[in-house]
Every structure is written in structure tokens, then in C-alpha cells.
Image (spheres, rainbow, N blue to C red):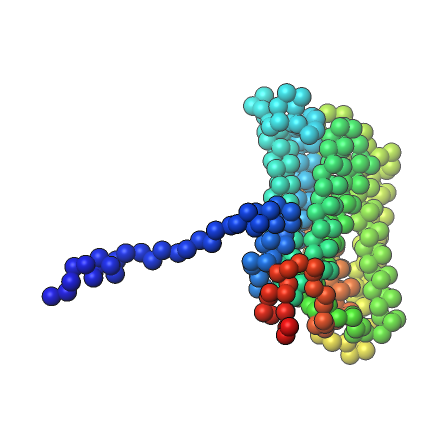
Length: 353
């Protein structure tokens, strides 16, 4: 017959000892929390890639939700900044659905900050340490902070179209940095080696320049178009909207033509599959964006299609940057170690002493 005390002992849960933080640990965490976390956690490469991808996704989401604020006429749903009203930090019932939409978009900025923060922590904790990744993460953080302030200025000046355009262009800059960081998490830190000749790389830079001009003119279309962002009288850019829209369409066709020509050139020079696949992806995204653009133009700019077109703008920009980054490769290389004590205690990078 089994001993009852033995069965009770078997059912007793195993206690996990939680390490006690010493006073020195607490001071170290307060002085440099990133180094403190990095000393105790090493993320897998997949974790770092997912963190960078999360920051990229949120940078696109914040653009789309910002467009929803404008398209629903909620741009002044919170008429002041940083508070929602002079007397309330948050939206009130009297402000209705427009206040909820505008305040909700402001709250998404905190989600974006969390995603960028997660990317910074993951990059800082990766072993071996890659300073370039951490810098890209911090670059995103400062762009987010700058754009938050600019967004407040947009509200304070009553949705001035030039500040709205600057707000969108800075968001495009955030998407660019996030795309580069995502790509860098999947390659080494060695010197970049070109996969195609210089004439092809110059052609790609022409493509990038045309895409930048396309996005910039798109903000002018927005600034002179009918969707002002609020139901009240809002200043518009003193330009003929249809003329600017036609210029935007011409630039779009230039980008499409350059992409199509690039694909044929890459095939002719027997380029690797990476550049070919990225160029093909860009061409498909451009075709989808073009269809949406023409349909919205001939259907008097329905809000849903305009919002979808804004999403497409972000995806086109990401696809263009991926084509540029696919024209070279970065092998693994020896990287420098940070000047923290934990670097010498990590078995994967410490080496013999």
C-alpha cells in the first residue's frame, strides 16, 4: 500500500525561485534599463525580426487611421492639443463620434510607441550586439515624437493643408526607416555587396526619386481636394484639384513604366532572383494602386476608396524601398561589443580570457 505522505509530496507543486534583485541591480536598471534587460535576455533572430515587423505594420496603421480621421471629418474632433478640450484630457460625450475617432487615433500613437520600443529592446538585447539596428530603432522613436508634436500643431492651426502634408511626409519617413530596420534584421553587418551593375542601380535610384515625387504630389492632391478633414470651413491649397490629380497620375505612370523597364533589364542581365521578385511585387502593388486611384477619381472620391488608396500609398513606398534594398546583400561580419559588463559574461560572444 503506497504511503499517503508520498502521494501528497508528488502533488505538491514545484516552487520556482525568483532571483532577488540587489540594490546594485536596481541602480543598474535605473541608470540603463536597456543594458539591464540585455544582460538577462537574448532574443532569437526571429523575435527581433518580428519586433521590427510589428513597428513597420504600426507605422502603416497609424497612417491609415490618420486618413480615417480626415475622411470622416473628425480632424478637429479634439479641437486642441495636447488635451482633447481645454478642460478634458479625453473626449467627452458632447463631442460625439468625431471626438471618439480623433482621440482614438491619438491613443494609437501610444501603441505605435510600444511597438517601436519593443523593436528597440529586442535589437539592443540581440547577441552579438548590432549598433546599426539599435540606431534605426531610436530613429523611429524620434520620428514618432516629432510627428506627434507636428500632429498637435496641425490641430492648433486648424488643419492647415501644408502642415497636414508635412505630417504625412514625416509618416512616410517613419515607414522608410522601419522598412530598412526590418530588412537589416534579416541580413548581416558586413559591407554591402552590389548584386547588379552600376547602371541598373542608378535606374533604381531614379525609380525611388520618382516614387518620392509621386508621394509628395499626392499630398498636394489631398491638400487641394474635397476631403478637408473637418465639416467646418478649412483652408485648402489654392490649386486646381483636377490638374494636380492629372499630374499625380502622370507620375504614377512614370513609376509603373520604370518598374516594368527595370524588370526587363534585370532579366536581361541575369540578375539574382531577389531583385527580380521584389520588382515583380512592386509592379503588382502599383497595378492595384492604379486601379483604386482611377476608380476613386471617376466615382467622386468615396471615403472608403480614398482610405484604401492611402493604404496602397504606404505599401507602394515599402515595395519601392524593398526593390532598392534588394540590389545588394550584406554578409555576416564581426561587430563591435557595447561597453557594458554583461558583454564579457555572455558565452556566445565573450571568447577566451
